[in-house]
Length: 395
Figure (cartoon, rainbow, N blue to C red):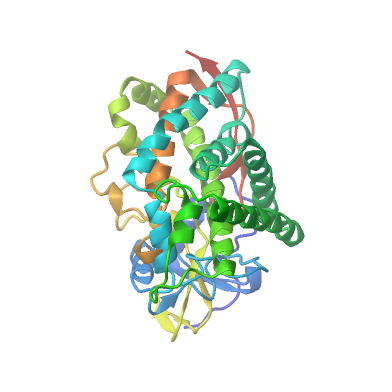
């Protein structure tokens, strides 16, 4: 069956809970829906359908459309824009620079940044949690991982913030301009590491420069630049949205605040349940190579299918009482917050560490957390807040 009219509209104004109510309705009556926005796309909302797509990278490729909306006017950016086996040397190089030893070395630095940002935030009684904490934290973390100098760190932070705002506003011109600044930063980092390589188990650029394809050939310069540019952005987009959602949830639930403050042994479990509840993605995409029937819909080759991870992770068929925060939920690790398969998020271990330390820092620095105004939401491909006004009291 094809579609008749607009079944899903990602351009409507949203409040904090709106998208999840829409997803619940779609899962019940139209689990694979069509939208006329962004040139037209399908959106899959059920966990089983999304998991099946992610588990079949041969049929469902990422090389045609990997995100909705697709605003890129630049070149290929591995590993996201490539399928296995072409993507594999890039992914292995990134993974090598994100091993357990590297994460352990970064952990105390994350804690320092969390404490410093929250000292300032709490001292002034609050503010926009996304702008004052959620956005700078991952930028500072990536600056450490890439071993950037102070000037490069400032450039990354400012440019990435402008890029994300332009993406949310569907401002293609500004997206293109800020993207080119990040490409230029990637080129300069590659040139620096060629002259003075760093430890490839600690530095992603040096690791990529050492990588070889299946024939033992170094990775092409253009693809290296695209890969570094991709990494620079991808880890700076989702964390602010997720941390903003976490803060809103805590502000709505003072008893949970108090419980988690007193029980730090539950930090890991709490982060995992927050990831399930507030997965910040609804727009990663695949296309079918040969055409497919999905949820009773006839999807033709090349038509983009947005994978609403945020919907899958509240699918009542997998997670009972899906809209409720349940600490130590037995099957919480079945969530798809980091994707699945060959394109599963390479930085998920670092992200989990970042979020755990951020949660503990927020709880330890505050006595109360409350909303202090209206939350503003992101647009597709994310789902979550980009502005979270908080009022906090210190310990």
